[in-house]
Amino acid sequence: MLKLKASVESNEDYVTILNQEFGSTEKSVRNKLDSFPPTYKKLIYILVFSTSFVSGWYFAPSRKPLVSAGFSLLSGGAGFFLFKKFNLKNQFEIKKQIIQFIDLDSKNSNITTELNKIQKENSLTEGQMKSEISDIYKKFLEILLRNPVVSIDEIQNLMKMKKILNLSSQEVGQCHYDLAQNLYKDYVLMLEREGMSEPNQIINKFFYFSDRIFSFDSAKGYQYESARIRKIFLFLEETVKKNCIDQSIKLYQNFITNFLSNPLSQSEQISEICLLLGLSTQIKNGIDGEFYEQEIVKILSSEGKISSKQKENLKNLQNLLEIPQDLAQNYLSEKTEPLISSELAKGFQKLKTQINDQEIDEFFHVINTKREDFLISNETLEKATRFTLNKVLCEQVEESLKLLRGNKKK
Image 1: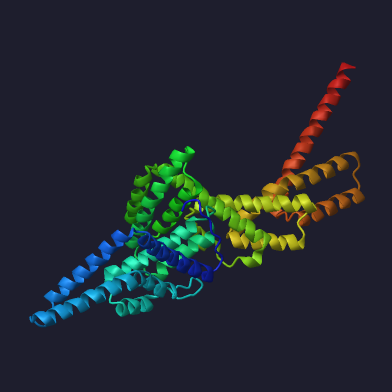
Image 2: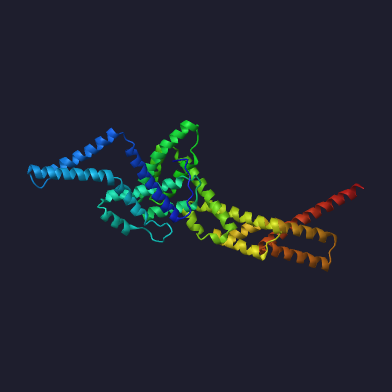
């Protein structure tokens, strides 16, 4: 199972695959029964017939031998027929009935009404119904794990599946624990055959999905369920947590990158994505700042200025990343202050050699133009002017002193 891959893009695909999976499981079990030697199958049928026959004799409505014998034969035959023809059908038919109501694209929070109806029609106990539902959730998780690449859509769909099937945090925890045991068997085989020293992508993906699902439980529930599956693999808590945080950072960075390339394709709010990925405010702000600064550098490198269109793009990015105005201005100032300082230095150097009204007017015209091009604030311009002028004056004083020392030596 670990090496299989699947690409699923829509709710219809998921429903189809779930039906195919349980259908193939049913076929596999039937084939396994059919593969038994004739003698074994005869023994099974004889056992079923005998059990039904004895039960029929015991529960016969009359104690007359002929009536009891007839009733026993009828019970035995019915039991034999039902076992041979319908013993597997009911097992998978219930799951198919549940699956047909699953719609990950729907806004309906769950299908409780439909589930109750299915339970009543099939005369299932609450425990039996929960078992059927849990099997569907585990199979869905297996399908997601077949592709080792993690995506935000998959996390959202797993969350939706939990909600649709109306599974409690404890029930989901048990599903992950059961699947972890199966995964560990495959993991051990891969360690022995391929000499792996690190968990493969699918194992890491399973732990990441589990971390995200468990994180919406209580703090104690999260700790308990996380520790249970770690114990199976003997993984350290620090290692698993680091891998999960790294994966969340990667997904968040990919989300922002995709937005920059196609803003219209993203409908989710950043705060919702961060909650889903479990990113702290500190980590989020650090990533946001890097992206915002990178976009500023990219614009200045390609155009040499920030045009009206690019200004609008930066504003949209600021709104998307929910960056406060003062912080956005600081990011901008860090990248543009050196540029305006360079223009100031050139202007001051030119004024050193020739000062007249025309040169002064030209100097201020250039500075005002660059100020608009770089979106420089008054505070940043004043700071850059003071720094650059101080530097130019110091250089001028140093040159004058050198000149005086030279004249004295003569």
